[in-house]
Length: 403
Image (cartoon, rainbow, N blue to C red; front, side, top):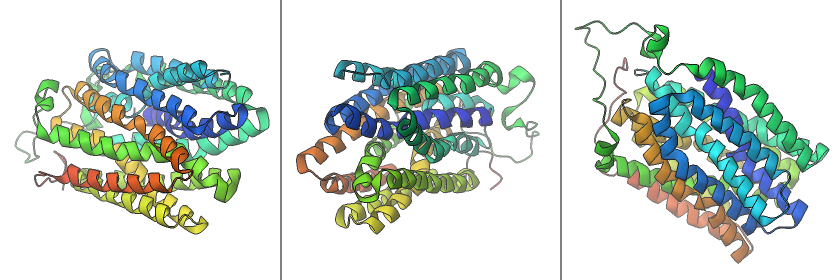
């Protein structure tokens, strides 16, 4: 289950979140469209994803993952194919909207809801390993997209990419991901025998319904903090190639995105080792502060060396910030209605973060520089870090953790 979700995440992030920066550069060069126009379409991509996130989580709770992930794969492939053939602003916006539907089904909400019934003691590790595919999408996806577009042209390259997506993901979702819960195949959560009565193993936190979660201040602090942080993160990642290409060249920018993907992978590997043993709110706050520092440094000293170093440090945080919101919700609110609860959180988070690419684009066009936008983003990230730990109760390891 985890391995299938990891492969799915690689395609979703490679063609969705990270692919957006490639489409931005390629469409601008091909059609002469402004950065702000294309950024608006990418904002539409995130808005579409946000609008459907609650439905995605609730449908996985109700029907299981397979039909939702199959629909998401088809939408992802159609969106990628269509982006290669757009000839007008309307077609551009519609193509990114379809891509957004696919992203909603195959990204954090869909994959964490898919895994929620399968793990208890190791739910943080399972989610982290599954979303490690996002790093593969960055490390491999961006350079391969750039190379294929250079060799084949935008339309042919994206048509081949869409076909590969279907060939790889449809068999996984039709086969491996057909089961809804471990009991369906005679297993238990975590793949381990149930803890014997009186063993001293801590009991899992009592699960909540969506309505109970929506009345919780803890829920809203998670939503606000990650909405702010991911707005800045998604905006930065969308513009990463365009930001760095004037200094590093197209090939250098692609390599830097891959390098940031490698540091993100190292962050996720570290997270997988520690996530079920640490206070995840405190860890998330620390990563948001590191993002703020990285952005502030790039704004203040936008030279080649600083861009490279700060991009790599920012990359280290990306996987953790992306992964920790579902981990916190799963740990604090349980598995019973996780899809519905996290779907509601993701709708609010993604609706806000959808404006990140457009905000960066508008500020860049207004000032003819990315520096003011980077400085503003640093301030917002610092505020997000404070919100996440405000009112925080001391938190120990996940329920059932041996520590």
